[in-house]
Image 1 (tube, helix red, strand yellow):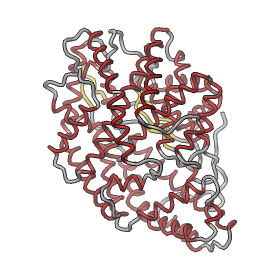
Image 2 (tube, rainbow, N blue to C red):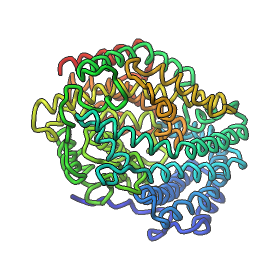
Image 3 (tube, helix red, strand yellow):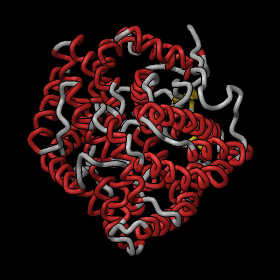
Image 4 (tube, one colour):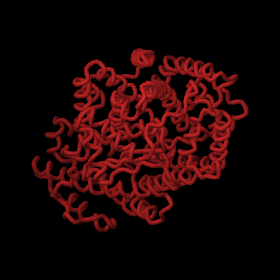
Length: 570
């Protein structure tokens, strides 16, 4: 398998490496001083800027990747912090000056009618509008504070049968058919999490305080409105999010109740407790689609190859280049991600696999992101590759569903395969209410910026109850319920990045529906949408996949109806 090499640089020296701000500064200065006296020069200038930003972005990416792979390594932590505290704060003001220079150039109008440039220029203007010098040190502080979440969570573990288990490894035991064991492990996990509840509350309070300062400095009513501008949400509003919440409460939560009731009956329990939610309802042992990270990767490569050889090649290249870290271990940050590396174009996948179906789905998900990176790596400018998350998550969530046709690679027995598909489709029905929960909670947090911890706990429970089944019994576990939100890293690290999962989940169901009807045409639509990168608006990218960017009640009802039909076939 050929290893991909980065393109020859045109602006920076081939051997240039980022060490300090002083090493990069001359290139920014050169861009600032360049006279943009015709359209051709402007295009060249934008390419040079794109190259510089790609190099910086990739360097920051590797620092973040190394730090999350080993949160206990002081050198990795220092390297990442050096970027966040010494390099990035210097880049922000000069990037703002470069945006000004571009927007004030009379030749920019000639580019505004070209696909991609119009989207990029729109983003530039918005960035200029909300930029404030006084927010630069605050953003640095926010990144430093957010990093603490990974360190606190990465250090969590429990002891069971004289073995130390990460929270991810312990979570696997919640699939055991032994109810007493599930209860014991659930309580150990909850107890360990609650040991840090005050620390995580304090951290969140500090993040909220800093975020509110940022929004006030930029003349926004609240941080939610600031983030809608900062994230470039041109295609929908907070009201659309509220409509999504309402649609999910009306159309999806009743199905959640039915699933929970059915689970309670199948398990033959008097009360359905939180430790009864992950076990197979028919009393089967947990599905084990692979035994280690190496097997997970090999089977995933084959799965992708069967959908389309190009897809398998993407993962194979990443394997050859060492761009994956899949297995859970102590000291590793929680969660999973696909990190796009802008200059070379080959991303990095990080996750915490144990041996579960959820882990298999996670690699399908991150693999979808990776394919997106490969499909956009040759686009002309880095801005064209930086897709909004509503599009990025469409890539990943669609791959979860498209790949199901080939999950027999992971499951020898037909019954296990059917069970895996059923579990995943039920998980989708559970995902939409959870997305609505986290999103609505964030709206409340920043609309009520001066809330107390008691206010927050009450709001959390009210919102959680709106989007949860009414069958699960939390009696005696109220404190656990009060702090379930602290598991969600997005609240700490990437605020307001969550509604996208709901929007993209709907889009993914529509992509899968197309794929089921005509595999070749469905896959072609999916790939065509991803190839666009961010050269078109979100609704236009969705349209390229022959689906709608729509989260109305009628559309949710239609798509969830399709999922229910597919579930019934199993």
